[in-house]
Length: 135
Image (cartoon, rainbow, N blue to C red; front, side, top):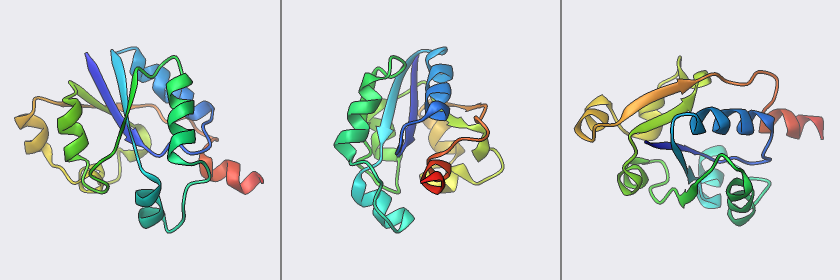
């Protein structure tokens, strides 16, 4: 089974590892990694680590099988169509937010492409934002 997840994965931390380990329990994990320019446009500032640095760290993680560039920016459909996963995995912190609007797809897109959605437990108490605040 191919598991897709997308994100920035800046300042790689234990929460990222926990999430990716859970993804790997279900199959081959492919990460759609956000570009520096997309992050800057979306968050108003560039990530701390460059795309190449974040990609290198992800590829060194035993739970990640491949990293692909999020070629669509705010529209995740192009990279999802490139990967053609069986399942999209996301953190449970998105369960009460409009993840579909965030990623620019709807349930019809998932159904048409026979893709399931999997919410995995969010690791409390750690995030890239938290790490930045500690500094």
